[in-house]
Length: 300
Ligand code: SD4
Image (cartoon, rainbow, N blue to C red; front, side, top):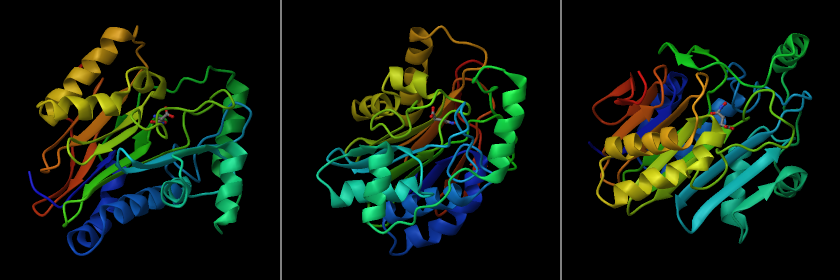
């Protein structure tokens, strides 16, 4: 347990947070750092569930969701962005430049235009080719369970980036960015941009972010529940365990369902957990820069 602390979902995020951690440890703010981490993933075409390179819906249209949060009154989110490659930055603009907390669809794109963000194609050529290949198979839009072998290579299509940070001044922030589920029904929004579902930050109680099947996470307000349990005295590990157990109690789980969370306390304790094996996460603090297996795996 120590601060500053930077923690993020999936092993592909280690090189990203390794670059950002020194800035967090110096004068960087937690909010700037979590935004930048998401922005790097959003431009990495090899990550097929975040930003450019993200897989489209069943009609071949790509849409992005993202959120940022520093406290219950300070959050911003966008759903269904179709023309901007950095939904996390649009989410931050919503938080900082409006009285609101969420904008959706083409009107969120218009808002990003008004703030000078460049309008661009967001469907990459490789994502389009994958969609065309999927169209031929006519299989349902349910991705296989994701396996992370720790090298940054992912197998499956659940790789939302959720990042949590505590800076040198003790301020906490989180970001979450996703292109959602591959081959989804057009208009579908997952947990990632919904405050309390894919992301929740409360400086008095802690922070949590999730990845995996958004419908499962949303059904139990997963990130809020973890933070609430920590606020009532649970360790991050126990809070994640109890949240995954609640999820398993509520849902008739299918073998392809996967959900994972990372969580931190204001003091810098942290943990991660997943419904099934295969999830990994990355941690940077003054003592280590590592990819770790989650301490909690509900169904091994
Ligand atoms: C969602 N949780 O939209 C996100 C997706 C995810 O593909 O983790 N990845 O349900």
